[in-house]
Image 1 (cartoon, rainbow, N blue to C red):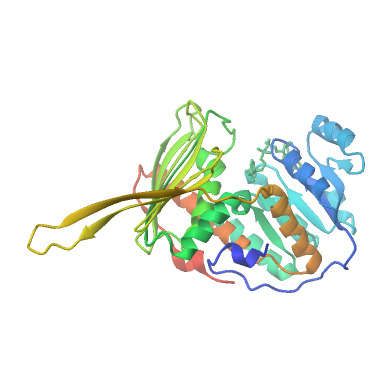
Image 2 (cartoon, protein in one colour; image 1 turned 90 degrees about the vertical axis):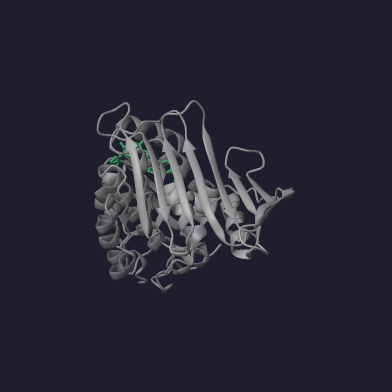
Length: 366
Ligand SMILES: NC(=O)c1ccc[n+]([C@@H]2O[C@H](COP(=O)([O-])OP(=O)(O)OC[C@H]3O[C@@H](n4cnc5c(N)ncnc54)[C@H](O)[C@@H]3O)[C@@H](O)[C@H]2O)c1
């Protein structure tokens, strides 16, 4: 899978940088062994051309637990230890959002390639700085937008690109469940990156405006529900519901086009269903007598690849490091995701007043 194909949002030009010798393993260090880090660790150990030489966490109990499970990886509480080791090619960061910029910039300054979990940074200015630093150090930077490697998400992208859906009228999405309440970030920072990254990938354009409302129902100061609207230059609209307060888990997105409609339901045994349904408007022969014809045709459920997104995602990163090809596309998309989160948060503070997206900044190809 090539990064460049992940998005046609303006991307960085793929460049060559210090490549690994063919045949040698890519040596990585994983930082952060909380909820998500262990998933990355397990996936890294499944990749044949990767050696995990360090695991790092501030919490000694977690270090001890995962040190026992993966004895070949050296446990350390001090991030600087793994930066100082010249054998470490790449650092994979799965720590809380507020720490991404500090850790990723230190790793890039130390000459390491960097994979940072989503969202790339806690401000778009920091995200932009990371991209510039990676450029100036000639190192790869990639953000863990895992859903872009989901076979279902990729299939919907293929269908949209094929033109089968016609003009995209709107996309509505619900990503809700009970918990896990984050202590430091709102539901927009926690769950928003998934929908924003998918939308940018599917739509290939940056929204012009974002409006959002939300509330901190349980923990004051940390919004746990948000309703976000986005408007795209093409005229497409999107509505995203994000919440940690729902009786059951729902991950459902509906894409409505002028020709067909798609339901992407991540928790279904048929995650993608294409409905040959629509409404046709027939011009009136005489004033005021227009006709609408409703069409409900076949429902198709395409067969999907069963590859695990986290494995494909890390394979892409590792191959980028190995082959010396910078992962174009992903960093710019990741920075745009942070722009959208900031816009949604500002709009929530203003009780839903739409925020214009500064598209020249967001779209600047590098
Ligand atoms: N791609 C996905 O689908 C996905 C899913 C869940 C979480 N995430 C992302 O993964 C990241 C981590 O989330 P989480 O839920 O695992 O958080 P968490 O709080 O459960 O774990 C974070 C871990 O990082 C450690 N840590 C913090 N600062 C550190 C430092 N300076 N040096 C070393 N260790 C440090 C903490 O001790 C903790 O063990 C977040 O960016 C989150 O958005 C991604």
